[in-house]
Amino acid sequence: MRLIVLASGSSGNAALIESGGRAVLLDAGLSARETMRRIALAGAGDARVEAILLTHEHGDHVRGARVLARRLGVPVVGTSGTLHGAANCLLDVPELVTVGRRDEFSLAGMRITTFGTMHDACDPCGYTFKSRNGHRVGIATDTGVMAAEVTEALSGCHAIGLESNHDERMLAEGPYPPFLKRRIAGERGHLSNAAAAAALASLRWKGLAHVFALHLSEQNNTPESALAALSKTAGAKTALATVARNEIAGCSL
Ligand SMILES: [Zn+2]
Ligand SMILES: [Zn+2]
Image (cartoon, rainbow, N blue to C red; front, side, top):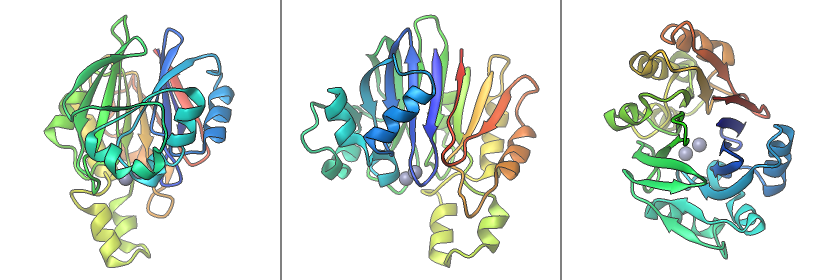
């Protein structure tokens, strides 16, 4: 099983989760062309992408969904709120599949579950993926707080993508207008480094091999600050990495 983060942050989000040659795309915030280019660059060009899963309707997650779904001839999966909210980016896609916020289904040979996230979107969710041989991957971004539901979903995962959006002090002292600071730091905004670190403390277990800090703010965070926070609570055997804009990162399980 492989998790490849193709892009992360407000300029575009996309990840490929592959198992036994079959794969799904999680979010489609890059152009179709750029997504395919990065999949090839990551050495996964031969994986058969069978669906596009959406977390929520914000542009940095859905921008490329329409062209990608049509080009690949695959369905787009999301909650009804997300599919409605993203309707303009999903015209003429081959198929829309609605899932709930606590659902379980099979796709591309994997068992996939959904969990609700807290964000200023219609009906946002995250996903976990379980391969046939029991490896688990979970990704949670664009969530203002780590609700119990999120922590519960991610526990027992071997690889986790976790939002580590901002350094609380950099955001507070930075140039953003007060309303935007409140939005980002609020319950329906983005997860801070400190909140991600606290979440990681409760997600720690011996099987957790990889943690990717995702959705880093370019204005209100640095990779060093995110890593410093997360390394305080990650286990010694867990490999930690940040994924900056224009970077690709991944792991094999
Ligand atoms: Zn986002
Ligand atoms: Zn968002």
